[in-house]
Image 1 (cartoon, helix red, strand yellow):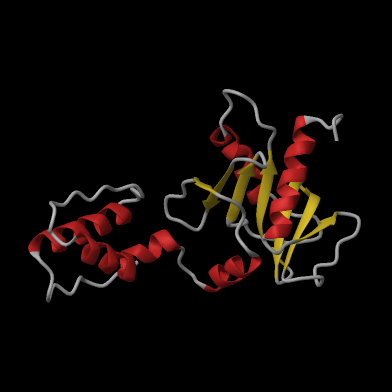
Image 2 (tube, rainbow, N blue to C red):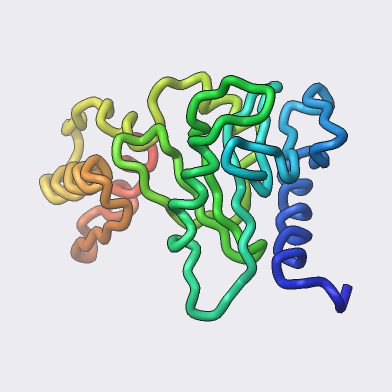
Length: 202
């Protein structure tokens, strides 16, 4: 609609993505948490004001989405404190603990933080996670970044020294919360086997 304001356009885009990911979207006046595994409630009241969206999985609150209009020169990371505030707030009618999963989104760009991490840090995502993903994650006590520390030692049998070094260094990088890495290996060093090995281990 041509007369929509930028934040409403962002929310419309967020709604489309949530629906495509399997969420049922409800208004705060018509909440039915039994309607689906994943229910996103608009403008749910907290003790610090209404959150743009509160995400419920299996009738339990698990996260929030902070909707933001796209503004030139403004980055979503600037709104992380506000999002964390809503995640830490008490939801109306519920005695909840801090919600672990938090998004900031313009409907075009979206960032995600898992506050179960020892050192939580937001990362860009293509879209929202499915309710089934959250359902599985809430069963695990440890988030992905913490589980990386539990990777067993690399079986070195059949690997070349350069492959062992590359895989071990990659895993050390991830354990140190550095999610971007570059592996540089010479032609014929076995890059394909190295990649298959670390993908399997991850």
